Length: 228
Image (tube, rainbow, N blue to C red):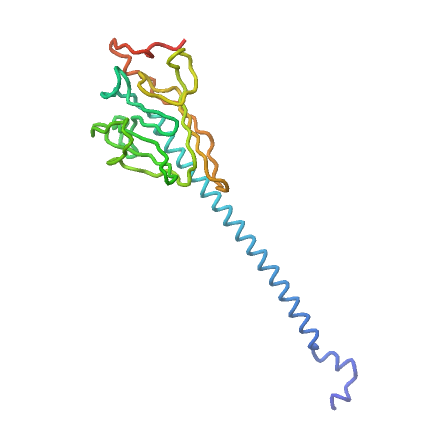
């Protein structure tokens, strides 16, 4: 039987027309495009979430290291200081003090520690053997070991809570220098560039050591007494 002799319905059921195939292909391409867009969006969201998690972990790690050093601050007599003062040199953008180093096996292995933001925007923890003869007031860190904590830091602000020189009352101060005791609190704030996903919660640390070495053995200093 020839195709011409087939019933009209039978001819229609033998296959798809060209128009139907084109429509099917267009629908398939549209669905594929939508699926690819959704997959790409999910991948971007996952990547952004991962970058945000990595950034948060960087900040947490830096704060953990910094808190440990500040909490273990050890007041040591500064042989180059003015009178009976301890080896702490604190300003608004930099802090040098003595504490166990990162690789110390015990609290007795005290080193000189310096926190500083470099011109390249790195927040770095420097350390040097305390008995190596480094001048803690000298700006140079040549010969010090450097451990970068964070990069992309735009600003740093360090403040110290303790007795004021004039009134003797506790207050936040921008400097801590030529003192006979460590500050009661140290506050560290960091700022990142606009658009940086990282956030630095204000870090406030209380040095655990309340020892006033410069106030012992009958030594006298302007801030050896208790604040009123």
